[in-house]
Structure formats: structure tokens, C-alpha cells
Image (cartoon, rainbow, N blue to C red; front, side):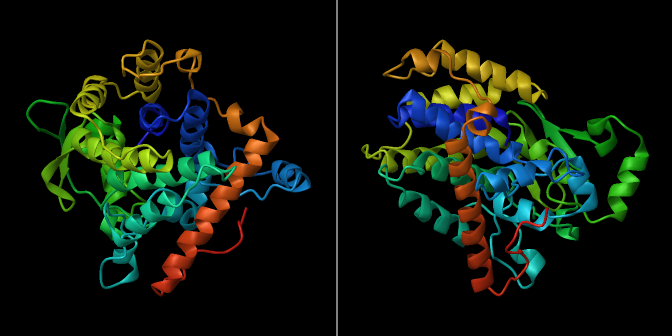
Amino acid sequence: MDLDFHYGTIYVLSRWAKFGSYNANLIASASQMVDDNFDDNPFSDAEEEKNIAMGIHVRYSCQNIWGNITGKGNPEVWIPFHFLPGLVGDDTDAKLVCKKHSKLSEKLKARLLQTTLDNADFAFRLGVGLHVFADTWAHQEFAGINTTINKVKKLIFSTHGSLIEKVLDEIVGSSSIISKVMDQINPLGHASAVHCPDMPYLWWKSGGHFKDGRKNWDEFIEASEEIFRILQEVSQEPVTGLSERQKELLTAAFKDIQSESIDERYNEWIRRIHSNEFEIEDFDDGDSVAAYSEGTIRDDLTFRAQFFNEINDHFDWVKKELENEGIFILKSEPIY
């Protein structure tokens, strides 16, 4: 999932769950920050040293291109924060495949439901955890490691109409060399499926993963329903789930905002939020200017510390759960 879901949808769901615009912005910002929390200068330790001096224990939850190429810290990033293991199968690679409604995702849901509003970090606990929880729908059937399980031989996709076969080269706009390279390596995550799992409006299928096809908007609605129920319970509202009208508004946004550009999709979500097209009952001035900015967390020392506290706490929780299953793949300390 991208910025349009991790910030836009999470913001809307938080407001519908009766969190105020201020807290909805914090929850949604923490959710998206999981994707933006990467080492943007891997050749210097200056940023780490500055954070250490301020008592902030930095752990990255995403990678830049260099990080993915070198593989340094890949398991510590992709497994706990983007491809929560389903723990199903006969070997470690199979158990690391991400699955929605898995034993571990249900444990994560239970963990989030224990969040209380008297915890000063509640917005960051929800934001980080809901990012990971949401990704179990988008990234299902792929693993956050390099493995043959992630290979996709053929992609067929459409927006709303008939499924049309597209070879990988047509999708990425390059030569057949890319396909040949992908055949020779064990892909990381959903690299073989390029960006298909994350685009809300896409209907697609692939050999070995979604033979019967997958309509992303249906998956994203299902994720939204589960997330909304969590947010309602934590905000101490009656847990009703999404109304038919709310489902209609979300489905329209998922299906009709059709652009490969993440920014274009996000900007349309923000426009709809600002004009109250999501029909927030207690719409206020905060809603009319709501927007994602890394600076919301990065530029506030308290928020930055709270965010990293939750990043580390979530990592430690996943590590312990995996070790209980006999999987000792995650390192305790950040290795940057």
C-alpha cells in the first residue's frame, strides 16, 4: 500500500472512529512514516550520532535503493514492518510468507486492541501497527526475503474491464533483459509483481500467486473494515464496522482514482478530505488542512522519540513471536 492508503485512508478511518483531527493526523502520519523511515545517507553516521546524543534509538523500517541492493538489514526491515510472516508451511521460507488473517496478524490485532488512550504513545502504537496490519492484505503471499516463493512468471491485469495479459517488460517499460534477470534471481518481496499489489484500483492475477485474480479494491475494503473496528474499539466508540455509505465512499476512492503516480492518488485523497467528500460528521478546521509531512514527526523531538519507541517495540514483539516458532532470523540491534 502507498501514501494514499497509509495516510489518506487511515486518516479518514480515524476520523470516522471519532478521533479528533489532531490525533487522526498523528495516527496517519505515523502509519506513513513507516515507509519514509529509511537511511537517506548510508555512507555517513552523522544522523545516527545526532539521534543517539538526543537519547533516540533509531531503527529503520524501510530501505532506500542502496539498502536493497546491498541487502544490509533487509530482514530487519521487510519481515517485521511490511511482510508480517504468516507462519504457515513446512520450512522457514514458507513460514515467512505474509498472509492476511494469519495467526500472527491476529495477534497483532489483539496487541493493537490493548492500546489505551491514557498511553501517551497511543497514536504512534496505532500508526506503526496499522501500517503492518494493512500490508498483510496488500503483500499477502509474498515474503520479505529473497526466495523462489516470490517469483512471478506472468502478470495479467486491468483496472475495471477485462483482464489483459501484460509481460513484465511492458509494465516496467524496459527490455526483455529485465525478465531474464528476474528469472535468474530470487526476488525480494513482491518485486516480481512490480507495484501491482499496492495500487488500489488494479485487478490482476499471476501464475502461482493469484490464479483466480485479485481485485485490490476488495482487499483494501476488507482491510479498511478490520482497521476501522480496531480504531472504534480503541477510541471507545461502539464497534459497528463500516456503514454501507462508508464502504461506498471508500470503494469509489479505491476504484476511481486511477493513476500509477502515488502523488496524484494521494493529492486526490487530500482534496476529497479537505472538501469533506468522506462526510466526516464533526468536520473541523484541522480536516480542511490535513496533509502528510515527514516533518510532523521528524521535526518534533517528542514525536520522533515516541515514533522510534514504537518502531523498536514492534520489532522486538515480532522477533519474539518468530523465535517462539523457532525462527531466529532477526537481529536484536540495528545494524546500520
